[in-house]
Every structure is written in C-alpha cells, then in structure tokens.
Length: 138
Image (cartoon, rainbow, N blue to C red; front, side, top):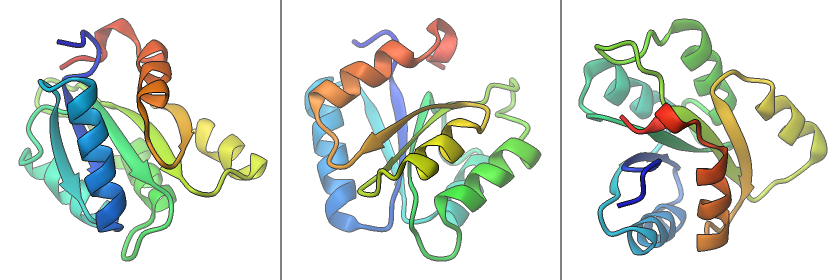
C-alpha cells in the first residue's frame, strides 16, 4: 500500500471526471479507498458529519454548482476544525483551467499541496504523493 495515500475524497460535479479519477486512483493502488461528493457543499456535509470517514487527501474541482472549490477552501480554512482527532486532510485542486492567477490563488490556501490539470494520471498522482507530508495518512 502507498504510505502517503490511503483515503481520498474526490469532489467534482462531472461524473466522467469522477469515474476517471476513481479508476486511476484505484489502479495506482488498489487499496486506496475513494469517496466522492458532487460539490463542495456535500463534501462539507460529509466531513462535518464524519460520514466521509478517514480522509488523507481531498481532490477538489474548481467549478461546481452550489459551492465551488474556492468557497469550499474558504470554509475549510476558516471553519473546519478537522476530524475528531483534529486532523485536516491535505487538498489538491484539480481542474481543466490552469491560468497562472488561479494556480497562485489556490496555492495560497493552507493545506493545499498542489494544483493538478485534468485528467488525473499515474504521473500526477506520483508527483502529488511526493508533496504530501509524511503524516498525511490518517
């Protein structure tokens, strides 16, 4: 099993992107548990209620209905205290848009470790795992 990535929450409203991200993550390491939410609001509810279970990484889309990636990051930084032990998962924003301003804005948020261009692939996951702190696995 990958030592830095065991539980991933994929937050994306695009069913095809969710399917592909899940498939790539599970092929990268069959022991990775993938959970999904179609928008930031539902991800917020899963995290606050504990229904997401343990999460090591949140893979977060930028453009979603109800609560986009930036609104989620604002809430996550300002209001989410972490799970029952106080642990806050790392976040990787992923999107088809890679404007320099958007990447810079994203990386200014605490807990954000990377900005990845869709689609997700093994090389991007490997690069991401190198950026995760050693204590990221929950």
